[in-house]
Amino acid sequence: MDKKRRAIIIVIDSMGIGAMPDCREFGDTEKCNTLRNVCAFNKGLNLPNLEKLGLGNIQDFEGVNKVSNPIGQYGTLQEKSKGKDTTTGHWEIAGLVSEKPFSTFPEGFPKELIDKFIEETGCGGVLANIPASGTAIIEKLNEEHHKTKFPIVYTSADSVFQIALDTDMIPLETLYEWCRIARHLLDEGNYNTARVIARPYKVIDGKPTRISKDRRDYSMAPPKKTVLDKVKDSGSKVIGIGKIEDIFSKAGITHAIHTGSNKEGLDLTLQAVKDELPLEKMIYPGTNITDETREIIFTNLVDTDMLYGHRNNPEGYGKAIEEIDTYLEKILPLIGNDDLLIITADHGCDPTVEGTDHTREFVPVLYYSKGIEPKDLGLTLGFDSIADRIDKWLYN
Figure 1: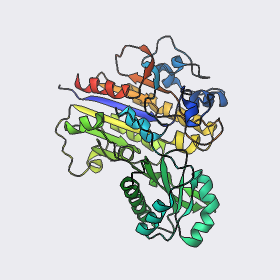
Figure 2: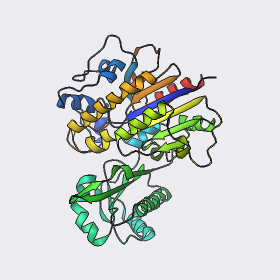
Figure 3: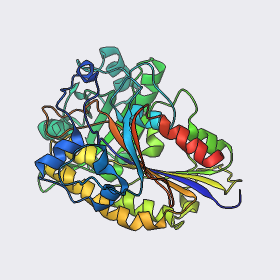
Figure 4: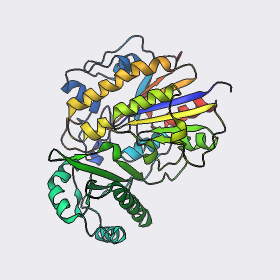
């Protein structure tokens, strides 16, 4: 193979397109349809590039027209894995189906786990230890946090152990170290918990404000290899943009860079497609690239989920999707015959329905390469069909 073949995956975090048949088992309503409801709330969205790829041909989204001559292939994916979280969704996109759901903690974490956490971190104690909205819990407990210097530990309907603290009072590196300790304790105790999340914040103008760029996720290591491992093990590049390296606990990644916003992630993705990223600053120590003929660029755009889905903000959610679409206008002309662009989502998080948790939804998938045959792919069982498509694209 002389030319470099690339797969470019863009995950619009939580942009689901309708309740899956088993949504009730996950505590969700059949009314959840993140994209359709966001479009309806905003009385239509301006998405000309997603529209021409075929997004509006999948189902009716207000303001997103059906087109008679789409340039991409488009369809709907149904998750095989038992979950509705970021880790499960991304792992399945990369080819790893999770048969067993991650554990959740609706009553908070067990006392023995919290006691070990306090002992090993030396933090003195914890606040909360309940399921909570992150923005709400730091506002509620900020004053007590400042008095006691105890970290705020909380969970959600997802499988997450979240630690929040004011980094003007306790150093950011201490927060990261406490997260690593929590990850070790959860793994050692077989708690089957998907992620430990560092939630740093500062008090800005009197209001506790989360610092997105310093968030870190400490995921369980994937139990099996994925298509990312296959590409890395063959000596080729796998570039993770955003929280990708955290989601996969660095497995199958050769280069990585964190982002503080969707805009930053989109700018970096554009640079990656142009081969303009400073890869020498992003490469993992000990990585040896021996095959330049294949490459994966894998981007997670988290603002839709973190800033707008969980905070019940459909207006902000809509603007975030429109921002993504403006970048596609720059990215699409750069996609050549040897590039495969994949746009999808990992779960839902409908900001228009009751609650602030993820929603168990179908997701859209759009494929584009210069000269691709436009096609309605219909409904496909398994996000892992993306991994199969990437494998065939890079190796066949």
